Length: 338
Ligand code: PEP
Ligand code: MN
Image 1 (cartoon, protein in one colour):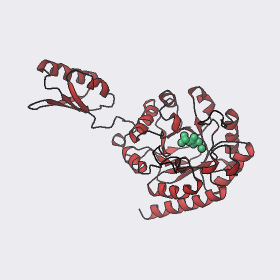
Image 2 (cartoon, rainbow, N blue to C red):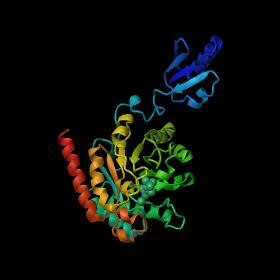
Image 3 (cartoon, rainbow, N blue to C red):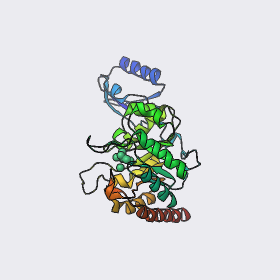
């Protein structure tokens, strides 16, 4: 962190300020005295320093971070990739490609079990499905809630596929005890109270990027979970809001290599919510794999036209089968030609 002091800062104020920084934050303070102003360089762990507090001091002219504000999610402090292993041995982030697939919402036992069997046969390793749905309209289908969780578990018993499903509030955490991966959706990406509580669990968390979150904000959300002790975080790029409205969101694929260089956490891509259009899912899935994604989360429905949620972006099981073949083919090619 670099702090530029105002020219009128006295010697006494400078000494007191430096002592305060060193005592409060345990950092080493280097000083450069120029003709017009003095510049301080803070060396050490500056993640806990509140930049607003520093800039509010009378003698401070400007303050800049030169180090990222996240530590636990930062590759600099944890160079090796984090690999998340599920209880059935499925690994996320080990250099392979993980496919998570299933309906936007769990609608019935037949629906989720049939889709689970189909996506498994196509090579998916994890079943997705929403039980609690964050819908823009209060009049839209809100999910089967607790019954939806039971149906997902039934599909897991029948197929052996681990399940990933979205949580929306802290008071539901106990209900998610037997869920393999808890999803935090785009709308809750900065629900810091929820993130803090999820940080107390020993369970993988799939953290989606908020519509308007920067890459750094997504990593700070991951940091909230990790600061509580849970380092099993999977980051998910699912498109951001831009002025382009042909697609539901704009898939920021450059976020994949950027996140992978800034952080050691696994990164997956959701081409379904990113585009909102089923015909774009295949090409964006291929592009995500080429960009280095550790996995994909794709919506699949046995009857997309009648889906209670997100039918337009859902693949049929046959379409998913084709996408799975193509992305695994591409992944194999990339691995062999590394
Ligand atoms: C979902 O995965 O069902 C979902 C609601 O996604 P997002 O939070 O990315 O909109
Ligand atoms: Mn959806």
